[in-house]
Amino acid sequence: MDLKRYKTLARRSRYASSRYYAMGYLRGLRRHYHGENFCTPDEHALWMSLGLDGDPRRVDLGRGYRDGVAGLEPAPLILNDPGRIGPNLRPRRDRDSGDSLMPVTRY
Image 1: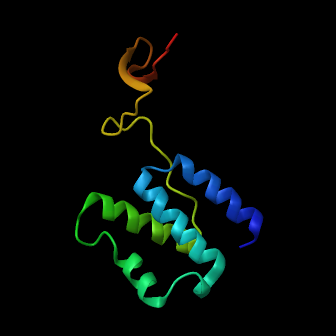
Image 2 (image 1 turned 180 degrees about the horizontal axis):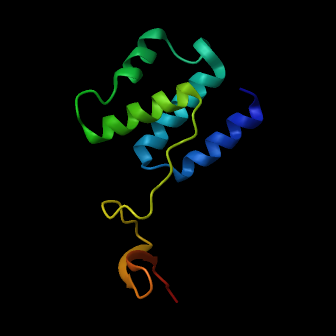
């Protein structure tokens, strides 16, 4: 992986599916870019095993780390997932396409 690709993926992690996923992803991406010089084998093993206990924060941290280590694109924020409504979105009925999430307009 070259520096340009590293910076591109790091920038894209800002729009990741959760902040915990993004934190894990950035750490894994650094491990992928720097190789074994980034952290100890014990730390790497710990991060690779995160999320196996079912805690949602650890699941996202571990999934993000594993995706970053593999050099994959970060998982994007899915705006049509009703379980993850952000501060600038609210459920609103769209006349043409049924129920959907629409941006909140603030004046």
